[in-house]
Amino acid sequence: MTALYDQWQAARQLRQSEVVNRRDQVSTDLERWQADRLAHAVQLRQDLDQLMADLRANTTLWLAQTTADRTAQILPRQQARQDYIQQLQADTEVLLANYQADREISAAEVRQQLEYDCQVLQATVSELRLEIAQELRQVQQQVADIQAQTAVDLAGYRQEQAMVRAELLPQLTAYVEDLQVQVQATLKDLTAVRQQTAVDNQEKRQSDRAALTDSVDAMFTELADFRHQLQAQRAQLSQVVWGSTAGAPSTSTPATRPVATRPAVTSVPVRATAAAKTTPKAAPKSVVTKTAPAKAAPARAVAAPRSTPSATAVTPVAPAAVAVASPPVPEAPSLEEVVYNYLHLAQGARLSEIETELGINRFQAVDALRSLIQKDLVIKQDRTYLVQEEAVL
Image (tube, rainbow, N blue to C red; front, side, top):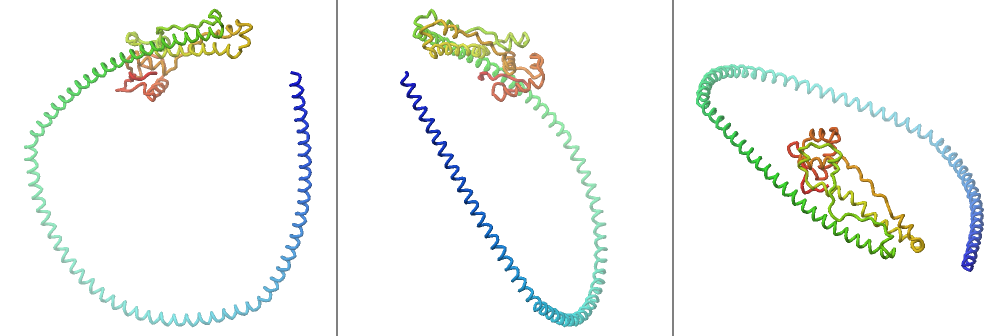
């Protein structure tokens, strides 16, 4: 043990010396890099200053040359511009004189043409007025004839309509009465079919409920077998760990199906008629929620001795005391479970009945029903909420 400690101390000193050497080397490198960077920055600043001075000198020389060139070009350009303006004014005066002469000639020709067109148009308008007057007199005569013929036809049509109405009124009355009789018969048939469908659905729900009860009983039987297997395995583990079953904690669980009170029935007042329709469907949920913590308890009891094997060899009583755990407190049922159990017991109810029987407000009832419908646990038929028989909460 001392040799290992000395070896560890030597390795520690070696590591510390390496760290110190590395720190010194890093500091030296950083100082060297800092000096190089400062020298490079000074040289770069000198180069930039020289470049700026050269650039200012070149810019000043270029500006002076450009100013001299522009000054020399100002007078020739001004003289050329004045010559161009004088030539442009002369050409514009000649062009305007030519345009004025052409416009006067064109105006005279257009004036003569417009006078001739006005004379022709006046003659044409006079002829059209005479023709329109003649056609208007003919149209007025035709309108008078049509009005007289329309009055005669309208009187005949009214007489025929009265005769047809007198003939069809009895037939229409008989047809309406026959149609009412057929509608009443159809409504009676639909009512009978609906009642028969309701009876069939009720029988199907009862058969499905019975099948579900049988399947739940089979599942509880399998659960009892599984519990027996777990108890045997736990006894074997206790025998292996403790050497005897006397010091092992006893947390046996019942193997048969327990008869537990449903949370919805004990926490919420339900009508006597609804409580009389109790079915064993809600029992699996309450049993599963109560037996789930019992499965985790043996695992903790077995895991405790494994984590401290040295303590079990000296004092085997201490781990047994640690393994003993208090029974878990049963959780209160949620609002969805309460509503679901009530609907299952009552075999369907309306929203107002759910509010009255469970003592909750409209928002809580609507939220719980919406959540159950989204989970496909409850369906709505004719404003009545029913539990799907194949669903398991």
